[in-house]
Image 1: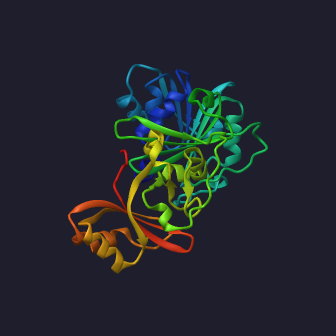
Image 2: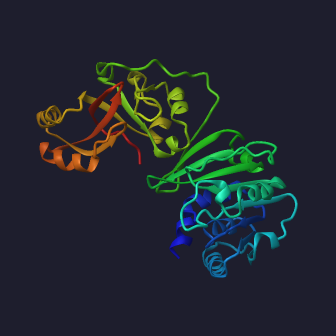
Image 3: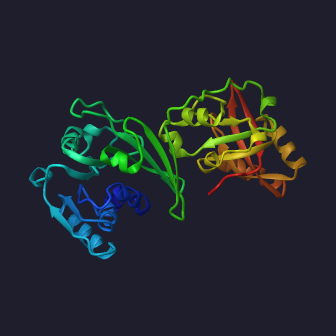
Length: 342
């Protein structure tokens, strides 16, 4: 069904989560159609729990048909209150976030509700809770320590946020109380940025467009921004914030080369031209250089990238990336070569 598919985990993300559990028996609560359970069954036993009979039947068939190997699995169609969890358990929970038919960002509107989720994982050896990328996690007196919060991006879309608890954090190489942002590439490889304790600090603000000439503009990937790690990202790589955490960054250290990790986690481009975002001026500069904008990035302005691509397509034959951003109160336009890794 549409609802079941919308809540199902992307196979590439589920495969990463499966690694965190090793070969332990996993209790997959609110399994849905089994997107996570299939990957859990590829590396060890899994016990899936789903209260809806039709969805539970789909989960059974999906696990049976798509798992590799012969690890034991079971699907329990029952209410959570009727399912007996063992002590020292390993748990994955994907609460229903569409109880009222709409996406809910308030954990108290989930099913099971946040208090029940906390009770589920409190006795766990390791646990993962899947929630929406924009969900804010409330403070809970029920839990003795903090989650690690991990965000995932695949295909340019931030798919989910996962809360890691207990020994799962150690196995994933994450620290409790911190955040991480992971990009999963088309070939299954991935790049991760963690909120690290660093001695780096943000450089002073850039206030003059001339200071950006010859520099590299940086736009952290959506998953870095969703995780609230833009400032941490800028500090680690020595970037300037051009308009606070929501704006573009500037990397001034061209002579030292660009860190490979930064290229993996951001769109980057060397500035060829920069000036005020004036339609007549911009059109003139594009024509003079035989450029047209193949892609356009906009931050801090209401410019429509789709309309701008149509408007400036006839200006030249050589593709560039156009950046529309804010510097103080001024909106600038910049042309860059593309240096983005897929």
